[in-house]
Length: 604
Image (cartoon, rainbow, N blue to C red; front, top):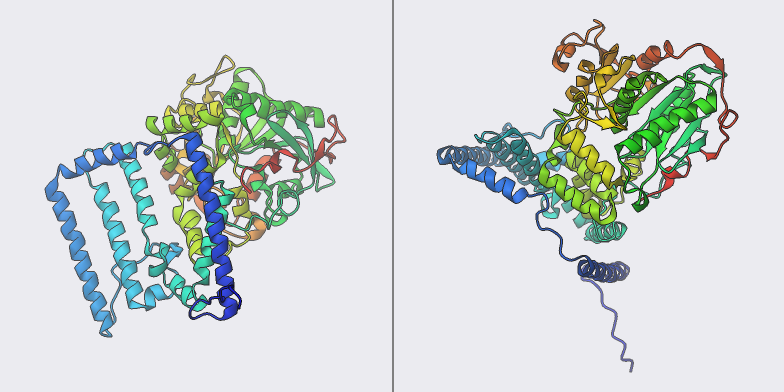
């Protein structure tokens, strides 16, 4: 008689289903044990981490004290909420009795959390949804009415309260999300098992930190199905590789085009795939396109500062472009913080009589940080000190920290929707090139990042004449007298349009401002063939003091703004000359585009 125990089955499941589930539980147990051991080892070696590194406890304590200073207003607010609850219960009861009623609360336009029909059709889920929306709006409204709170604290409290509100949405919990309930019943719980495995995979991927996959990370490979425009790396130093792209026309404009992307992301946002590649499109219009590809820095480059990024970045690239083409003068583009760097570089060059850049375009770039948008919430002394403490351990800011910050700005879209999809529904994320790029984050050298946050965001020194001194040169943006084209995104949450517009009041040369539909990415990457969004232009030839005044005289145009930009730049780029082949000029080719620097990944 054998001593081997008889195989067990899970009630309600077939033998095959039971075996599959037990194998999944075994996998989960083994991976969980490994993760816990790694966490314990890391905790022992690093010691306990600060409980409240952002000092939110004191912020909310001070805010609550001001709220409690007016108890009558607080009681009134609570009564208002109670009355709304009573109305909701009343209309819900009427609906349960078959009466037709109008909802008291509806999701905001574009809120995808409640798209499932059950949120409207099923009384219980509709009640949950409306109760949540009423409470959320009441809480945010009550906070905004508290008196005696300075503007910065009010914005900080509002932002972090919104994070709490978003996290507590009934759509984020298995028992209160109708889509998850249905999937659990239909799959006999398999979705939750798969979701737990997905959670463990993301914890392993982040080496103990939760690195939520927003897309199928194996569906794309840089240089194969993203960043595929042909070209050559013709120059490199410890900070950049300079890519010269192959021409797409027999003739090109005399003046080359140098693109300076942000170093906080990879450059290939401008070259995701052929149909939406700005780089490819620009070569098709007859421009000789050069792009800076920033290195993904590690501990070897921790001492780099803003001056180094200017010297080893655009200034080194200008020298290389001249060697590669024989042309001394170029036009340039600066994207986001690459545009902030370009503004400082142009002022530096103007002070030294360097006229190599004849015209410059700014993609959603800030130079005056008095209204920096929600990123300004993260900039106060306590939070900056916390960031600097984190950077001091390795000499750089981990890419995951910066990625989390940007994801928080759109938490429902970039965090919670994937929590529901990956962990509650147990689905694998959909392949999406834009989200693959978004996850391909970069590190920030400690000295450089601290300099940028303190001097731009915290103290706004770039916009003040002489506020910054670079290489013994006082920086004065008013000395920028060349023609500039300034693009802003109407719905940009990273570089708000009203903040970007301020550059028109600082630069002294002719400035063409254009307001694009959509936000920080889609407002830029919007090829004409897509026929999406719209843009606004004010043809009065004047840039009044505020964006609102500019908008009052602006006219809406359908589709992409790229053709308007091309008309503006082409007339400044000189006559046509025979197309230039990368590597055939004064600089030999080092390797094929997109180069090796861009392929260094932090999280797989």
